[in-house]
Length: 597
Image 1 (cartoon, rainbow, N blue to C red):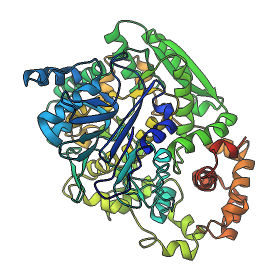
Image 2 (cartoon, one colour):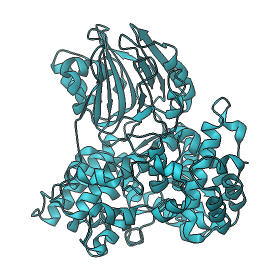
Image 3 (cartoon, rainbow, N blue to C red):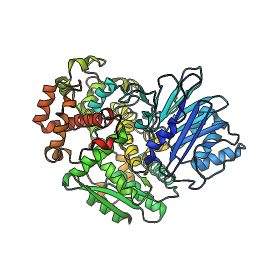
Image 4 (cartoon, rainbow, N blue to C red):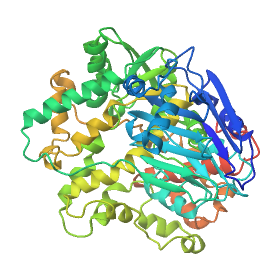
């Protein structure tokens, strides 16, 4: 979706939203719609999942005074229909989006608090001349916005689409570059561009002529340790019931539905529950590699046989990685260096051949204490500043010492103090009296989850016109699990202890006893062989050496050394330079004109 509002004083570009949606046709190839009146314009490109024949957008209130566009799904739309009918506001049509204008009329700006789902939504109230933008609780659906030159506001679901607005510049943000080099993503609210920002999760932003923008956060992760004395069996039963409900809510679809199945605990559990509830075989999808240490395909196949699914596998090689680089960066619109995005792109491309909607197992690690770094943080002990301790276990892009070696004095001078620990501000928003692990999970839930994992899921699925649904991201499940103390989730060396006990009710032993393995690719091996010439040639090109971020001599030395411990740093640097080639250097040309292979 996309839109713009002049807010009574800015230049009005009514054609921008439709142009932006045309650039995002992959997000919604089935139908388009638009609205323009009184200095506000909205547009939507739709992937049909519900209301196939009567679910067009924008959607309107009965009196035409409220118009809305929605990116995502509202899982409780039937419940909301009943609520609205009881208030004398019957909702016509079969799509979930059609509840929105009526719910806004009934509840005003608080309407968003009644929504269960994944969404970014725009509401234009014609009578009040008000534009309301809102995002879902955990950030499953993106929304980029900017104040164009001349005034007003513009927004879009993807960054490259927003840049089609003639009033938005492309000057890069040095702080965003510095954060990216540490974390391999650009964390919200920043984008790589100074003038563009991301609307953070669980946020409502209100725009009215002659008034300053208003924002509020309507939900937060708990991590309160309230459930210290609750019996283990009660916790397990509650988690089981909430997860079953979350899966059930995500099975409604009028188009083919499947499940991602890596062979790990989370995707296996979601698939097992879904197949039980549906009572029929699902299509399932996984990727494989020639490198045994990264190949989970045999485990995925065993789980598929256990659940009786129709299983599909795609085997990834270095050539796929090169091909996927441009897909990743084009759809991200900014630097992004998680190699797992390559695997995700291949999985969603495979899925699109068979289904339109898929269930995923994403989102459990941040609430169930599932990452190995939580154990490393615990084992470091409690001495010293928590932000500094967590920075040491979290940063895996370009470490501080290598930044010091590479940065030019001029670039370092543009930063807010170097080195700067950007996690410190995030930890300041957590409860200082809470245990370290709870505070770390709280930070990750508002940063790592939304800015790294969910960005990957959204962009790579939408690149292939597939809708992903993640039961572990149901806010009711999150509300409960985040109140369970961390020491009841990480027990000794066992991560996600409550979830594993629940999973034992559904999964075979060989899946339960497997060592945790995140979706990853054999990057180090590829870097030293097939990918090395491309990465070296890209980083040592004349434009790369003249960017001004890095000292050319130091960059040449680091690239020519190609040390194994710099694998992720080299990939991070490469993806930054490749982004420049695709987006910044070729702003007036199609990205495909500068292909890698």
